[in-house]
Image 1 (cartoon, rainbow, N blue to C red):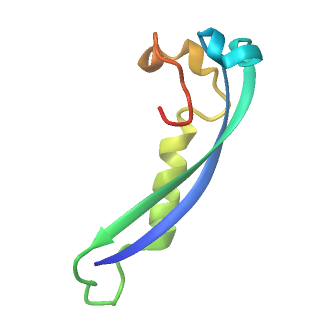
Image 2: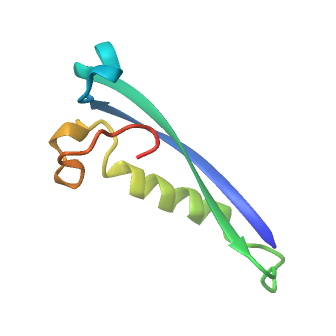
Length: 86
């Protein structure tokens, strides 16, 4: 198995519900580091898993939808504590 991982980050605002989160129940900023790993059983004819430049561009495009957004306002996260794990 062969793999290539690319990394980027996004900065968001959010808050948590629940006493366990203490002061993080108030609106605050967070930076999420995101890794995307691409895997293949065999390398292609050029000896690569994926074009690393395109993989980086695609990850950036996905993260751009949430970058500098308040996750509390995003319908996809309604009723969800947007922890790192989520």
